[in-house]
Length: 330
Image 1 (cartoon, helix red, strand yellow):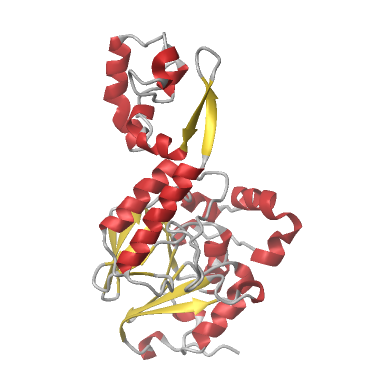
Image 2 (cartoon, one colour; image 1 turned 60 degrees about the horizontal axis):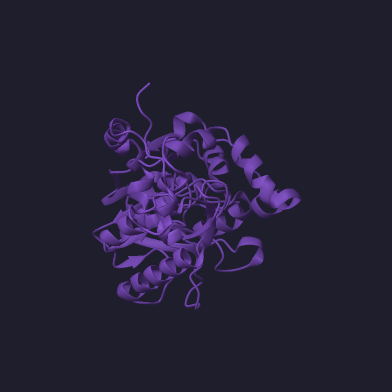
């Protein structure tokens, strides 16, 4: 039996952040949620999958908190290991506000496509690993776009759009405490382990956007990330930069140039050519130009077709649409 503390009897707390280990499939330090207590407001960041809901409930009960006492759920993104329990929590507490990016909100209201995508990866193990994912009523959804500030009790959280791991990923920043809740943007690391692994799920991983999200997080200069790194911010920042650079330079592919020869590129080349790639795709251009080959380079030496100057100028005018990843008006 769960003992719910009446709202009037909630004990006000100063800004307090508690990591709740949900012991996913019996493995500690695999998936965790964050409990945010602030004045008379209680929120959970990324409650985890429904399969760990019983453990989450026990963790809350140990702190004299029930599901009915919660005011809000904040999602960094909607992948099942972070958000799968959300629908069940709202079913248990219909007053919960669920904060989620606009691109992920529709999949919380109707998780059919989300589940179909996950089933491609996990097959028959899906329910064992993640439990039952219930829809969230649209009236419970609070839509985020980024560049917003949430007030939760006396705590203020800035919301920043940080795609790359997922196109709907956001991060939350508590500037007063110097804490960043970055979801899967900065990779996966277990306590003081020697590795930081990038979380690279299909289908919408975007390394160019991910690089920009790294920059957005580091620009905020959080004193600590909401993960048990056990190192100074400068050390974590250096590790992230080094790991990202290693991944970008170590992943290669080839494309066929205009003369039929093969040319190698790294993902670092793609990131460095972001500006060129945002304007280069024109069927009147050679393939080298469409891959952003620098003018006068050996790579571009086989290029003999160029788009007319007026088309290039028009693409430059439209470049902001690509840079901001937005669609033109219809």
